[in-house]
Image 1 (cartoon, rainbow, N blue to C red):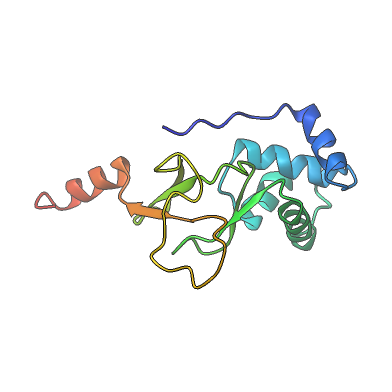
Image 2: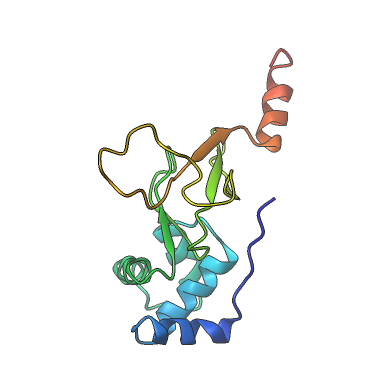
Length: 154
């Protein structure tokens, strides 16, 4: 089972400063939103912040997640069939993801072996492996029940 420890909101400013980034309302709000809603797209973030920050634009959100990703405060994940890049505040632990192929739900999965990179490739062609990104794909319990309800033979 994956455990994610939330960082206190007042710590985000400190994290930004330590990364060499200015502390802005948009960056703080994005970090807090992603901490509460992991695996969100830029569009999700914009929708989640727009009520409290009506002047925030899609371009601003894209710039913010780019800066936060570049400075390793958030992790960008590109999963099959998710429609767009997703972002999360859980970084530096080489965890993986499980994704429902029906509804698209994404959850964290801790490293299979317990140390990076989790898998040892057959041939790395002279490269030093830094991480292994694994996506387990399946059907979540809610979707499986809906499929059963629709087709009892499932």
